[in-house]
Length: 106
Image: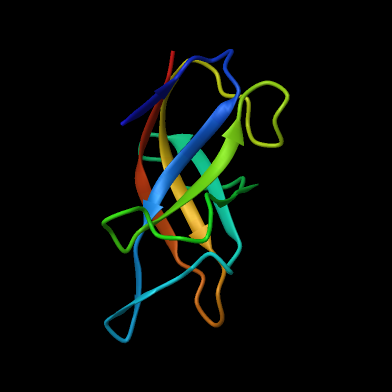
């Protein structure tokens, strides 16, 4: 579980491992978005994110998706609480919505 202070502006991220026909796939050419919901909620508002580079995380086939959150960012400014974190990757023809964990804002 990730944790940030409510007055902080920083990247929140998720590791993403994608396969196509059983082989690792580089998703960094695909747009990625993030949603933050109450625990148990469904995504409604999406925020544009990006990829932390074009290479997999060393020693893995996963890539890091990220979005800047907090005051002064293009992402959300979150109040104190716990949030479910979702990502949505837009590819053709698929657009998966993936729950990727929780974020605690202190």
